Image 1: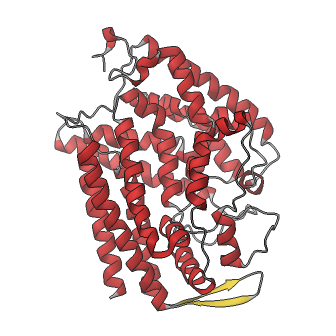
Image 2 (image 1 turned 60 degrees about the vertical axis):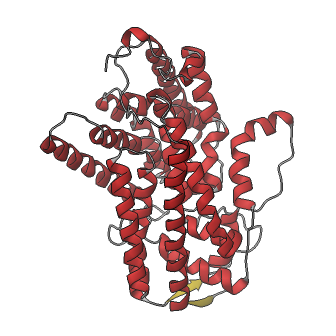
Length: 429
């Protein structure tokens, strides 16, 4: 029965992915990730109960078949709620007339100025962050030792890559990815791909699906090319996520394939120790959005233990106040369960609203879409991967810088239907 539920969950997710992708909806990115992790749930179910060793207390824990069954039931209910709610919210607040606009004109003075300013940020961010992170590694990054204005400028410049792709200047977009690829390999952090390579693939695929007069064979050929791009990015991501000491692990597994196993382990231990983080994830998620303003006003930061730290205590028995910031394999199902147990299913409604809100804003015009796409990609992955607080980290400064520059160079028309583009070149695609 558990295996049947796992396949039903996968079927629901991939069916919803098909319809959202076919209609050119941005939320298809979220459904792609849900499908990705739903597939990796099947080995968890197939293998039955298994053992987990908690390193610090030296304790061997059995993840029971009952917990695995509980997990798949929780996941399928969460996904169904999320699906119905995102459909409902889109019908209520989505554009009545959907005009797919995933291209930007090649001739636009306003857009050229925005693009040049973002290129300047890319150069400045690459140099400053390159100097800062020269002697750093993965551990320094996750402990925020490399945080600097160089990193902020680099992240803010990621919109350049999406804008170049929207203008169909793919080679320039790929060249602009090189600093991000360097930092991804150097620091063993594939999050940099979320801001660079993956947005290019997304733009390419969305442009294919919304081509009105393209022949069927031409579309199929382009979709195959797009699929190869996705696989290539996953393989690069796998290569980056080596053992943190720098040696490759045995085999060449897809990234994050262990996340569902980690989710099952944490559900078992959450039940065993009656752990709960309650509102902590959501509070940190929200505080990142207004963090610059809190610093300006000197508001004290609420003393909240980041949920990954709680997960570290559960997963490996890491002592309180241990000196290393840990990241543990989990998904957004576990984040909601650790927060509110079965009441956490209501978070599926909240996240459906957030994703639809993103989509409504980004469907305003192609320029806003390009400015926000890298950050949307980061947000979608981090959220579904279970790093709720981390999903809004770039919003602390990078997004604000990107939009301040764009508004300064193109005016408040950035938010208009034309996106601040020159009327004389509006039809020059």
